Amino acid sequence: MTAGRITLGTMVRDAGRVLALGLVIIVLGGFDGSDTAGAADVAPALPFTAPAKHMGVSSCAGSTCHGSITPWPGSTVRQDEFVVWLNKDPHAQAYKTLLSERSKRIAKNLGLDNAYDAKICLDCHADNVAPDRQADGFQMADGVGCESCHGGAENWLGTHTSNKSNHAANIKLGLYPTDDAMARAKLCLSCHFGDTNRTITHRIMGAGHPRLSFELDTFTATEPPHFTVDANYRQRKSAPDHIKLWVTGQMMAVDALLGAMTDPNRNHDGIFPELVYFDCHACHHPMSEKRWEPRASAGIGPGVPRIADANMIMLGTFLDQFDPSVAVEFHARVKALHQASLKGPAATTAAAEALKSLTEGLAPRVADMKMTRPQMRSLLMAVIDKGTRGEYADYAAAEQATMALSAILDAMKSASALAPDQYKMLTGTLNKCYTAVEKDEAYDPRQFMAALQDVEAVIPKT
Ligand code: HEC
Ligand code: HEC
Ligand code: HEC
Ligand code: HEC
Image (cartoon, rainbow, N blue to C red; front, side, top):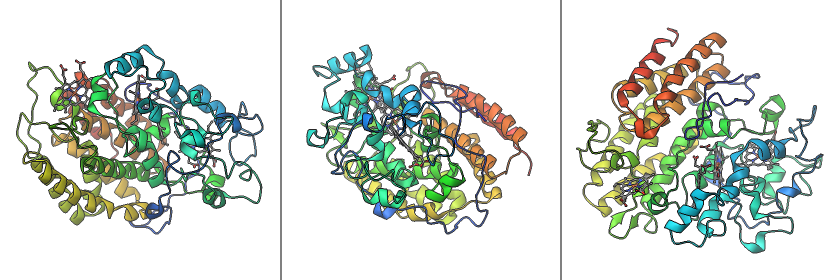
């Protein structure tokens, strides 16, 4: 079954969504269920920093291991993961990208000899662990390989295939828990936003690097996945639904941004704040185009760079439904952050810390949440409603809202809250939103608002 979901940036419309949606085990209880999927507080070290040696993609790629041409019938895992990765996953090309003309230009502009052996580039475009953690079969040219996400296999490669082994045992031996929503979000964002070890800056953007944007559920779907969530999978692992992945991704993205803004090593560049944490299009658009609009949630006037708050807008929309009293506090602290940016660095750091402490407290509750079908529907309406009230005046917010709507529709479909024809109608209409965010520089908020209204019009009444 394909959904009209595309990767923003490269615009592959109707990327096949192969996440198994057949078997639906979503408990329709209250908003706060009691599923113990999350392990937020014991998040293990990322594969990049954990001590284990990385054995190299070749050690996973055997035809009876993960290198089968087609999925193995009856096997626990598909076993064609390597082939999916090699042929379809952009991570397999991440190192090759560093050899491109575009990378040459970026490197030249930054005064680097070349991109393909610059640490700053390799850290995100390959599995650039320290040389003493690279085993014999390891090859940098494999790009973002299996162990970049699943962790160095030194201690579990030999045992993970034994029938005595299981997921928990593998994790003890250093397998990274990519099935856990929090852990996955932290992992992906470490490269798709950056962290203390891997930092992207406005200087790198200025040299020609594309703008980064990320949404966990959409990016999991478009990578594409090399795993199948079926009954057997659910028995072995946690299988967060689309909305949980979406919210967790938003929460962790807000956390990552606030972490960067409060980090003295990352939050400024000379006398300027680090511009990569501001809305790119607040500065980058033609002067002839008068497009500033007031936004209630920010409460700052024209002519000021805005902190990149697209993920905050999304998280706030979720909180309005999830916990209205926390939401009130959240909106107040977001607004205080925007306003602090007009006062100075110390005020901004303090406001960012205050917001961060609020969002950190949410993690365990989000990990445990369950949503009913009516709650999913009101979340869908809320995301649309935000837009018709002018909150998606900035491109990045519209882009996030579009991906959010995809995630919510997919969750509703999985929970049988939408019949197949309703789902088809809605995702078909949602393509108008995708069209409206196709080119950031041509973004027209009115076109986007009209597309949202069209989506709203085809939402079933009950
Ligand atoms: C080690 C760094 C790293 C990690 C970890 C990582 N990525 Fe990526 N990802 C990249 C790089 C680099 C690219 C760009 C590849 C290229 O085109 O050269 C990319 C590209 C992508 C793309 C294609 C984006 C587009 O616009 O076409 C998707 C989708 C994606 N990643 C999803 C994920 C998901 C989901 C996770 C977490 C499970 C993740 N990535 C973890 C580095 C990483
Ligand atoms: C913090 C991690 C990070 C760092 C550091 C980084 N990149 Fe990237 N890069 C990414 C991600 C993630 C993408 C994919 C963006 C997307 O499509 O969403 C990407 C995309 C690109 C692309 C576009 C690829 C395509 O398929 O169009 C080029 C070119 C590139 N990077 C070159 C570089 C170079 C050269 C450096 C070093 C100066 C570098 N990158 C440093 C994470 C990083
Ligand atoms: C960008 C991150 C990323 C890369 C690179 C990556 N994986 Fe995965 N992989 C995931 C995620 C996310 C999942 C789903 C969560 C889970 O099952 O742990 C997953 C799941 C799996 C599973 C579990 C399937 C199941 O049913 O339990 C296997 C096996 C696997 N990957 C093998 C590989 C192999 C082999 C490679 C390299 C050829 C690879 N992965 C590369 C992120 C990645
Ligand atoms: C506060 C304003 C501001 C923000 C926010 C901002 N930039 Fe810039 N950007 C600038 C300035 C100033 C320059 C330098 C222009 C020049 O050299 O002519 C620049 C240059 C660039 C260039 C190089 C353009 C060229 O002419 O070669 C790129 C690309 C770029 N920025 C991308 C981004 C991205 C992506 C973001 C968001 C992550 C962003 N910028 C956020 C002000 C900003």
